[in-house]
Image (cartoon, rainbow, N blue to C red):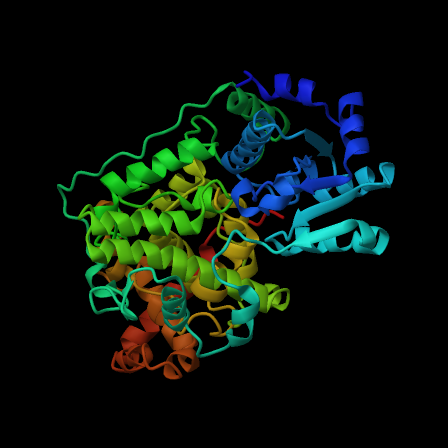
Amino acid sequence: MLETAREFLSQIENYPISEKIEQQLNNSNRVLFILHDQLNLDVFPKELLAQKPLLIFVESLKYATFIPHHKQKLVYILSAQRHFTIACHQQGFPVLNLFTEGFHAEAIADFLTQYPQIKLTYMQPSEWDTRSQMLALNDQFSDRLEILPNRFFIADAEKFKPKIKKGYRLETFYRELRKQTGYLMADGKPVGGNWNYDKENRKALPKNTVIPTVPEVEPDAITKEVIELVNQYLPNALGNLDQFGYAVTRDRALELAQLFIGTRLANFGAYEDAIKVGAPFLFHSVLSIYLNNGLLLPQELCKMAIVAYEQNIAPLNSVEGFIRQILGWREYVRVYYEAQMPQVRESNYFEFFNNLPQLYWDANTDLICLKDAVTNVLNYGYSHHIQRLMVLSNFSNLTNTDPHQLNHWFWLAYVDAYEWVELPNVLGMSTFADGGILASKPYVSGGNYINKMSNCCSQCTYDVKQKTGNSACPFNYLYWNFVDQHRDSFIENGRVSLMIHAYENKTDDEKIAIRNSSIYFIKNLKRSYSE
């Protein structure tokens, strides 16, 4: 492999293109544009690839800066794309790398304008705005554009979109896909007799549990070059770049997937909801980063997990839990996104309008659960799903924070975040902003849940056993205040209506103390918002 992307690009030629590429264009009018989150040739039509069409890649400054993406995310996206471009070139494909200060579609429009004989094929983008920008090219180039369906997912979104409404839940969708794929199925029934093993997958982490490390991948010359680029031109982006350890090639991503299967999958299920301070990864796969830009495919990960079960490498509860994250949840939120966009962007069921707390940007808080979660985000562009849901999103809800600002933060803060996956998780699930289309209840809790599932509270300044007052864990009184303020949402839902009765059983003095503590805390919480 060439030592640096700069060396590669000098040989492949950037726009305007070279004599070599001009000759290719004259010999064939087929061009394939590949987006930064579609880095896997296996999903593109074999008959198209057999023609060895010119592959076009775009490095878009506007996409990199339209929101202040995490530095780790910027490095990952650009380095992975550059590595993939080089790999395609080494497989015999002619490659053209375009740079634009605008969005991807602007570079493609310029290219098509300069080369009127060219017909361009591209796969439907996963994100709404990129898709809309590319579709706008139809006005000028309709007879020269071919759009392929997006094959980076298992479910047919068109089939399931009409079903996305209140009452159609993940479990129903998940069972349909299990039957469709045959994953963990035998004679039309789920292996083991149960569709899911949630009840076995809610254990707190024992104190002396040995946690296998998630190895860091040493940045090569290309990645180091991208790190230098991001530090130089986007120094104020969120997060730290003191260390960057993500894989940026398919081969390395596969190695990490195999390592997860062999060393962490067995305990993934039991402890997938656990939190430990200073242990950001625990037994989680940390593979969503590679799934969401195509380096890994959902089918292959599901099959790897099933083989691990069949070979007694991992128990059924862990394997089923892992497959449900991919076949169930990941596919479900993608279909939800397709069905609900773009109107879901405006959802704000509880009508919260407070700015995002400043601690989400700097981790400056005495609440250890929040400090640890945000520190993980700043350092890695990552925290696992329970920290995302039951710490960061929970706190946002309890402090009446605008869900759009939380959604904006999740989009820019996580390396694995693309709008199609983070928006449903934030506006649909964690904040209940869509009013219950995706989730059946608001995801809020008091300090007891965090104490049960983590070691955060034992290290915290606040006392999780106290319910109100300056020394009490804020999650406690904020939770009951939320229940009181939004009782209609709880009464309608049988799963949480008992909380209303529990609140009503409190004394008048307790209710006053809850309200006063909450008002004081929310009023004095430092907030900041960045566009």
